[in-house]
Every structure is written in structure tokens, then in C-alpha cells.
Length: 64
Image 1: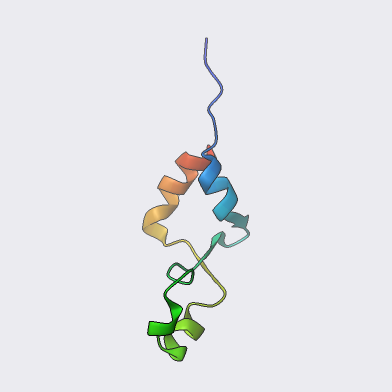
Image 2: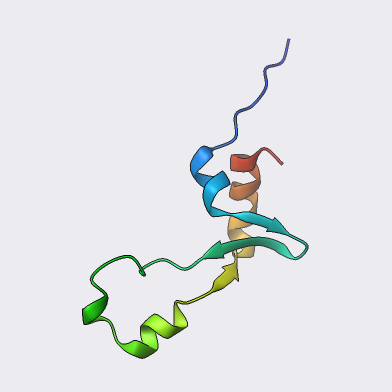
């Protein structure tokens, strides 16, 4: 008898599946922002795709 696998709740909240892979937000934008340069904060805006080397781990966490 096989058991259902549970999805990692933290991963489910942070990563979305798209046609090109997995979309994620950038880290280091929560606090202590006054010491970071405007350019650094600007480049941390928006989303990016999960690196190809991490896709297998994300698949395991999301049971895909």
C-alpha cells in the first residue's frame, strides 16, 4: 500500500509553476534596507526563475 505524499507548505507558498519553470521572489528585501544601496534594492525587485540545478529539489518538495 502506498501513501500520499505531502507537499511542503513553505515551498507551495513561495514558488509558482510557469510554462518556463518555477517562478520565485528574490531574497534580502525584508529588513535592514537602509544599509543597502538603491541599485541593490532595485535589482532585487520582481521575480526570477529557479535555477536549473534546484529544479529537481523543488519537484520533490512539490511532489511533481
